[in-house]
Image (cartoon, rainbow, N blue to C red):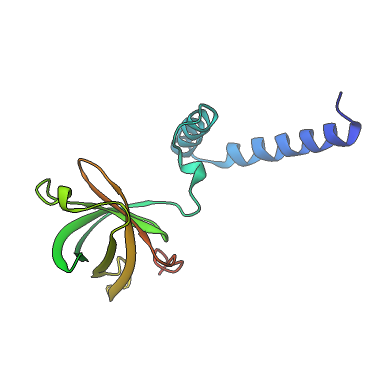
Length: 140
């Protein structure tokens, strides 16, 4: 049985959530619903992310195991990027490999050089986690 204090907290929390959801545009409500459903099923969702992703297209040069490659960043967050990479290059990469990325800041148009590590390799490309989150990366 829940106490009156717990009931009050539950009511206030639910009311606050409902109020915030009502302020969201329909597209954001649908995304939130989808994320919540995936989260409750134990599937991957953006809820687990500390930093939101931004879909973006940026040319990137990157060095892995002392070899230079070129690819396209297709999404980015303050914590990392996903690089679309030619399939011929993918077998050369392994999770844990260190990476040095060089690209132009998406908003400031200034060159950036960032260290990171490969955390995922799949049929489309590689996921890179920055050594240190770049909190100002996606803000002008």
